[in-house]
Amino acid sequence: MNKQLIEDTLRLLHTEMSPIAGIQLQPSPAACEQLLSVLERHDLEYNRKVNLLGIYTILTLAAERHMECIPHHPDLTRNILDGDYLYSFYLQFAVKCRELDLVAYLAPSIKKMQIRRSNGDFAEQDPAAGIEQFLIQECRQRSRTSKAI
Image (spheres, rainbow, N blue to C red):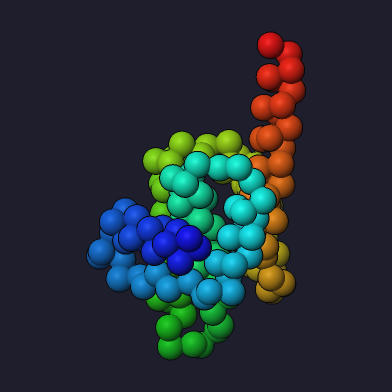
């Protein structure tokens, strides 16, 4: 199932992403596994799993491209532009998937990470942990709402 989920996610992302950008979406299997284990712990519809894996993939690749921004590197401009495009694509894709609450939840940590990177701190980012915390919070809110009714 995980292989099918990854294939469906990449197919969806390829249809949504502008071909003019020329960005290859090839996430590492290890990176995908981080979120796949999160998704397995939550009772989610298949389409939502695809959407969340898509969001995660975009965020991971955007961060990777910006991590490759080394002064005087021949692909410096391309890496900056790719990373910036992927971050804007993340927002566009999340809105289309109706995951605005997730965007709002992740925004502070993404912004802090971008500020740290602009100051030379290239510590790893873990969007899977942020997505899992969001799903846990969402589940708690649903539980409280259903009890109140």
